[in-house]
Amino acid sequence: MTALTIVAPGGFTTIQDKGRFGFQQMGVPTSGALDSFAFEMANLLVGNDASAVLEITVMGPKLEIRKEMDIALTGAKMGMTLNDKPVEQWKSIRVKPGDYLTISQVQQGCRAYLAVNGGIKVPRVMGSFSTYVGGKIGGFKGRPLQQEDTLETHDAPLLTSPRTLSNEFIPKYPTHALIRVILGPQDHYFDMIKTPLWGSDYMVTTKADRMGYRLMGNPLPIKENMPKSIVSEPAMPGSIQIPPDGQPIILLVEQTVGGYAKIATVISTDLSKVAQTTPGDTLEFEKIDLKTAHALHMEETLKINRIKTSF
Amino acid sequence: MESRLFKKAVYRLAGDTGLLVEFGEGIDPKVNAKVRAMTRALEKTMPTGVREIIPTYRSLLFVYDPGATHPDILCPLIEQVENSLETLAMALARIVEIPVCYGGKFGPDIENIQKPHGLTTDQVIQRHCAPAYLIYMVGFTPGFPFLGGLDATLFTPRLTTPRMHVPEGSVGIANNQTGMYPIASPGGWQIIGRTPLRLFAPDRSNPFLYKAGDKIKFIPISEQKYTRLEQEEKNR
Image (cartoon, rainbow over all chains, first blue to last red; front, side, top):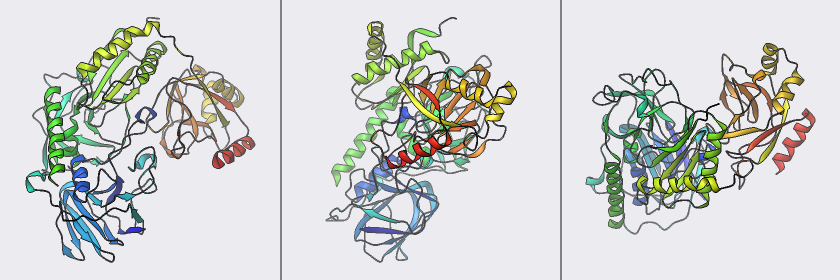
């Protein structure tokens, strides 16, 4: 049964879940929601478990509601109205057939997540509902949503009482983000004593999408005695690769192979911070060790579990 | 020739969820054979907490869950497998045949290969079909094989202006490499033919025809056979 009709698609709206795992060795990138915390919270607020949601980029869509549902919008701060009346993010909202939900321009951050109870119903492709735009698979026909697309949802019980995420857990999305990294795998290609990677700002350029973020700042030259590129190898989301012009590119979730040396890798818990910046914002990098990174990862898992049990 | 195989694997961190293990340097069949043997051995008994093992030309990338394992646990495990490898018999590479219709509308750049080398179209086809190419790794796009072993008389630089749209199934040459485009994408390779086979079929239970470590043999076919096979693929 149709649950949503896309009246206007917004800037770039795709269906995402946690991602597609197990096929990176075949060149299929993981895809999936870029801000995993906002993704988890959107689902939790409507009573779902990691279901498919809409990932909304910079400019929000206008949706006609065709089914009684609970919805929740998390992530980037974007104005939202239900039948022209403002409604809040980070809480569940009951909508009815005939309602119009309008999500407007981003005010803070870059990507917002709209969950509906039951989750968006699309075919599972290679284990995931995530849209991989480059490979034209997953999500809705393997592409971003367009005007007049209609979406179905899985049937699920409505919430017995509304849910709101406590203010203390709602992240800020600053225009200057401190990003923690672990050195390597090819930090030996660079002079890590003189490197400008620490203590200088790198600006997000307009070439920033789900595949990767190109940055601009003090160039990071490869040592004289090292080759300018490496034999192509797989790249993790968060890899900071350095092409010959010395300007870093942070790889995200739509690329599996890279041929440039990677000076450092963004820790998994800070990937969402990168993904919530927009062109013109600045990033500053800080080096941490593996132990600290794993402690932060554990802390994040525990925080999510604590929130889960609070509902 | 001096072997580029390392005596012992080199371990490097790839963030807080990745461990890169290098077995040698450059593009070398011996190094890649070791990568392959390690992959086979490790896939049989996937270490706890490892989500994916991704083989490449010369290394293996382990993607792990930091809540379930740690490089301090994984490194000795991998080392153990490496040490036991001498006793493992290397399985023969599987050869996958890929039918290709060369030249004409499917291979608009075949003249760019033959002219500089003074070859006829038939000679280009013959030399391109002769080897069984080792798949060193798969990536870039789903199912895109990085192949080694192209005949040196076919080496040709990329197009000066890349195409905006290279059709699905196109077979091409770029410098010393040959490969195929499983999905349509922009690209600068010299396109010499096309296969009617679906190299990436996400709707099938196994979406791929080959994987790293297999070998690919191109089989020349006529346009009539191309059309017939294309129809068969659609009905499959």
